[in-house]
Amino acid sequence: MLKDIIYSTIANKCPQCHQTNVFITNNAFDLKRFDKMNVTCDCCGLKYEKEPGYYQGAMYVSYALMVGWFVITWAADSFIIYSETWQYLTFVISTIILFMPLTFRISRLLWINFFVKYDKSKMTCDKQIA
Ligand SMILES: [Zn+2]
Image (cartoon, rainbow, N blue to C red):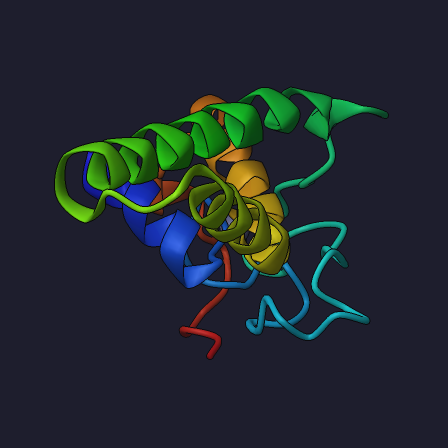
């Protein structure tokens, strides 16, 4: 279900049980730890990195997100804002660099959600873990 994918991606939750965090920190702008992932889910046992290089495919998701951002900002600039080209390029490039940690995490969470579906029956822990 789409709402399960959106919830898991935005809330940084395990795609299979929605109980534990995939990334160690919830803060994408904690630059020392934003890319650190837990190895497995403590609740359902899902292994987050199924094989070496599993998240290379997330680069395609990241690319698609960046193209989407480029198209949206280009359309807004071309039809509403009418800024100079250098101003537009400065804005797009700086926002892409600024939001890189967020894009990195969203891409990986979307990628694992492509292959792992939410299944409440796989949940083995007794209570919800915050
Ligand atoms: Zn889980």
